[in-house]
Length: 281
Ligand SMILES: NC(=O)c1ccc[n+]([C@@H]2O[C@H](COP(=O)([O-])OP(=O)(O)OC[C@H]3O[C@@H](n4cnc5c(N)ncnc54)[C@H](O)[C@@H]3O)[C@@H](O)[C@H]2O)c1
Ligand SMILES: [Zn+2]
Image 1: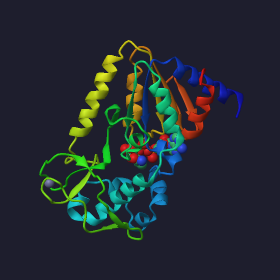
Image 2: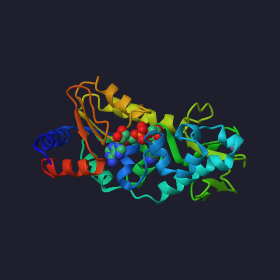
Image 3: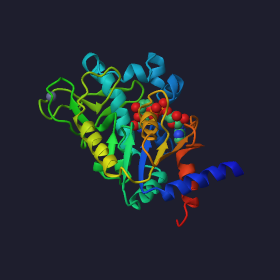
Image 4: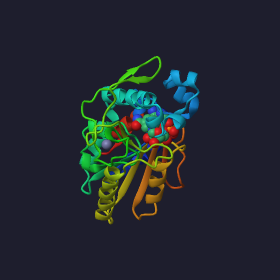
């Protein structure tokens, strides 16, 4: 590791140590060191899901709510496979470091993520301190439009044939009306998404930000891409708030607004190195 790199990490460690509150934000790159794929471009997506290469369908084509009406087995093949994968995945140790740093802050912490994989909850972060801005695969809503409540997927199983990526019936059903359910995830052009769960989380995040108005806030952003910029946008908007600083950890897209810290590397390795350099840890 070169000198300049270590100096930057040391700077990040000092900033995190001095902060009175932490906002941890994350995109798909945060899951990569737990063994999850990010969806970096069509090629990256097809490397993770070869059957879709044959079908000529990329992430943008598949993350479309219309499939639940026109071809539910294809729709649930994609989301069911991800549901199963996220259920099997254990969050990498970087999550636990973030949890420990967060727990020590007088102003507390919050998680903001575009990931739908439930990995922060699995790593021990409480539900009421997480905003999942694109929803959660571990929650269901009605696909038939009954507008019943959003509810946890629980132990419902989805059986996906790996060669075709199609789900075998029975498919998850709506607890309110018994017709087809879909994940409570925001898809592209999704006029059917029921945002109430995510909106409630957003209100809690807003209230927390108000409550820590006069506190020094560090944002630690991990693996958030530029293609769907929801996470990066929030990190950068919050810099307008006095006393706020950003540490951006990203394998390939670590550029930052001037005065902020960008660390080019994998989330786990960088978080571990920061932990070694936090004074008093
Ligand atoms: N696990 C999930 O829930 C999941 C997985 C894939 C995509 N998505 C969703 O798809 C949309 C697009 O996602 P996105 O823009 O976050 O992803 P993306 O795939 O476009 O970008 C991933 C980012 O992570 C970085 N990265 C890759 N490996 C990394 C590592 N080991 N450590 C740190 N950074 C790393 C890449 O440089 C890139 O900037 C979002 O809504 C996202 O939440 C979710
Ligand atoms: Zn219903």
